[in-house]
Length: 227
Image (cartoon, rainbow, N blue to C red; front, side):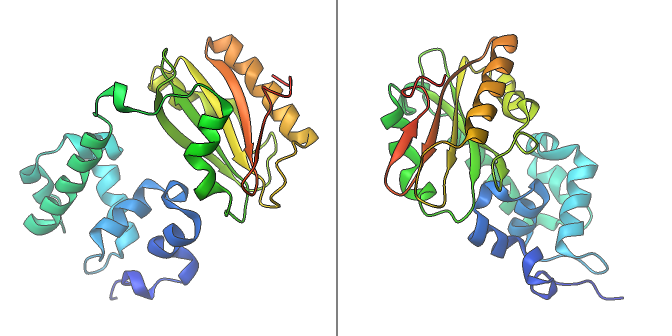
């Protein structure tokens, strides 16, 4: 039986289409890898191919440790794809190893809003993200947590803080958008904020703020006295 090529998969499963529609942060590791691989091999579509690679090497961390020669030994990769993967991994490594002082510094809710406004104001669903900060409030990174209507079942403290712990973050800022354009916090927004702030106190990671993005405007729950 012939494998399904990437373009033969149903549209809602196409990694590239999902990236266009939802953004790269919504994709799984295997979907991102599938985009880089482009095609599968005989008897194995590209998503299955990507998943097999990740499982065989121990996930992304394992993939990043392999030399280009070791990559080329994985069934189906070969020299060309191995070189492309290694180049992509090296670009990722370089992007996170820049001088910490060159990273954005957050001194106010305006700084957070300015950083994400042009992207998040046009999203058609609620995207909840976490901004990780160093001891001097430099941005260490931003991670997606959930997509969809904000509620406590979607936004679990474990998902918010596990990356903060991995990055050795001193503090975090919660961030999400309101597709309606009105950034006024709902009762659910407030309850989720309190829940996560309490979780941060236990872990010793302060929740500095929760910024809600609307259409070219925003609201800081810190400024509203909610945190």
